[in-house]
Image (cartoon, rainbow, N blue to C red; front, side, top):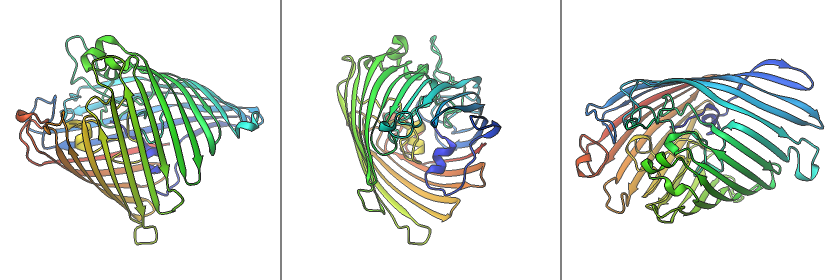
Length: 440
């Protein structure tokens, strides 16, 4: 339900990246061709939720993103920039293990189409490029994606029926489409000190009930970490889809978060936390809270430079996780490859204990292990309580090719007949995937 090539590289692999093929370049303009190709092979021994099969699932996903991006200099380092791109995507085989796709999805559609202005040195009191204004279809994220990380929920045909159409063209796990349909973004401030984002976004994703929202994000960026305060206001939804999905409370919903991420001045230390309160727009949901606290330590002087992270997150029963998504590596904010993508819970009505270990055998290879314990699920009944253990690798083969295999083991405490989401039984599920991304 997510991944982006540059985000995965940013998880720690020290390799150069090429993001475009230059078409034209001069003193006052630049025009590039942007190409990204992603493919994945997936296998699950068990089925979940909406997948009526009982023999497991094997499927493939892929997408090709292609377009143009560029900028034009206006003097004093100010510029106009923009991008236009399309995505061709598909899911093949039996469809995913949660039943959100069938394997018959194919689509080509516009993805990015935006234009923006950066102030350069025209407004020195705001810093270099201290004013950045953009409009159009584009990806947008706040913090580490706990609440907003693009419009990246990519259902297929699995839930279609009764006049509903959730299909975005396949590539459910890969999240081929991430751009909000309409945006107006204003970024104020530089890379340090006080800065802010003012934004309005509108989704055309039926699986998100075509939500519209606006918000303000304030940050203080220092050497020791970033403090952030954000408020979101829901402006409207597609009533028919919102009623079907239980998302009518997004119309008028108020969500406020406070977060911190940094090292508090201790170089090997990693700290991250976010606290969220949510007032619902109608009585279909109760007001809710969610929060997490994470601490990590990097042993950079040891063999393979290992790091260890531990995190506890809690989500109240009626908490709406909005547009959360993959951001700083596996487990954020898709907690468990099986749980987060197919089995649930999906960052609502649960407590999650997470332990992660990562190491770097070489500058271009990372290996890691993730453990998740899901408890107090399903209104405290525990019917979705489960544990998951994932092993993965990330390999930047060269400047353009990235590979990531993963094997996971998911153990639910209840089978589907007893209120769980695993349809066959509550035995251990073995899950495997491998992803490849080529980008220029």
